[in-house]
Structures are given as C-alpha cells and as structure tokens.
Length: 242
Image 1 (cartoon, helix red, strand yellow):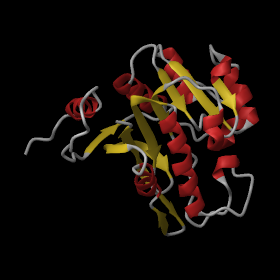
Image 2 (image 1 turned 90 degrees about the vertical axis):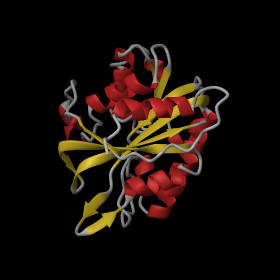
Image 3 (image 1 turned 30 degrees about the vertical axis):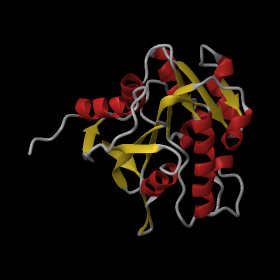
Image 4 (image 1 turned 90 degrees about the horizontal axis):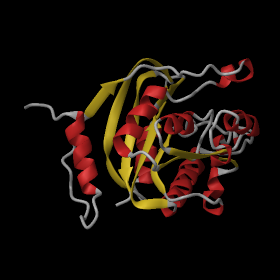
C-alpha cells in the first residue's frame, strides 16, 4: 500500500476546517519527517544552560503550512521567543506569553513589536488583551510524573504533581480556544520522557487532555539526529478548533 504524502494529509486537515463543513472522520495516517535541529540566534551566556528552544525549522514548517501572511501566530509558553521571532520573519503577527521576566525582557528587545510579548502567566491567559488567534504553536514546559516542581512558574515552586500539570494544561488550552479563530489550528510539540528507567507518556497524556477541548487531527513524528529526554524523536500534536 502506498504511503500518503505529508502534503495530502495537511490538505485533509485543512478541508476539515473549512467554513460550513462539519468535521468528518479522517483516516488515521502515521506520518513522520526529519528536521535539522538548531536556531539562528545564539543565546547570551546567562541563558545557555537553559537552552531548550524549539528548532527554527519546526516552527518554520508549521507556520508555513497552517497560517497565512498577516495572520496571528500565538505561543502561550514563549520561552526565548522562537515562535514569535520566526512568525515575524515570515510575515505573520507573533504574540506570546512568558512567565520568566529575564526571558521576556530579552525577547522583547528582539521583536519588531515588543508589546506582542506579554510578561505574564499563561494560566490567566483569558485576562490578557490578545487578537483572535489563527495558529497556536508551542512546546510547553515538560515534567516527569514524579517531579514536584511547578513548570508553569519556571519550576520555582515545589509541591506540584503530574495530575495537576495535566489539569493546568487543559485549563490553559481551554482559554486558548476562547481566544481562537473558529477555524484556527493548534500544534503542540511534546515528547514522552525517560528518566532513571521510568517512562512518562507526556506527549500522549497531553494529546488526551487537549482532545477534550480541540478536535485532534493526528500527530507527526519528528525525527532528530539528537534530542534528549531518552528519545531521538518528538511529536507534533495537531488540533483544529472546528
């Protein structure tokens, strides 16, 4: 049986979100691609220890496939600003939220529209003034099932657990849905995690949680020459609001 192409799958995804069309069942197709890791911008020395940026190539791919010039691309976990910066370079309007003030201050200096990055808390996303989102593209903070640090406050508070993490993910993306174009898309890059012989099915658990809010359209496996977290691949989980 001949494998369907990546472009055909994306066309199916697009058609399922067209106006006046109800989402139809799309045959599940396992897809994968290989992308180069790396980022064009070199971080200042003070940040390099915490460099867990999403690869530029991954952001470029999804921005190109699932948005048009002039549309709004949003990242609720902006980090070092990869999504916003690439979106601006590609003629989109990049918006985001970042909890860490040092990171937010750094990214704002690089952006053409500094006010498009909010130093704030993504758990309170609904309170911020944001335009209608066309594409939400993000790689959320990771956590293992036995970790106790809260990733949503830059890992600075203890007394957190995995079920609370997933609950907060649902809370955040339910707010994203309220701010999104009726036919917008959501792409979450995530990985399952291996630590000391234990596996945390983070990507699959996020997919399950967010599927309660958005229509899950499928996943693309991204193969890397090196990645970390015990794996050489990650998942792009693709959702639509329609």
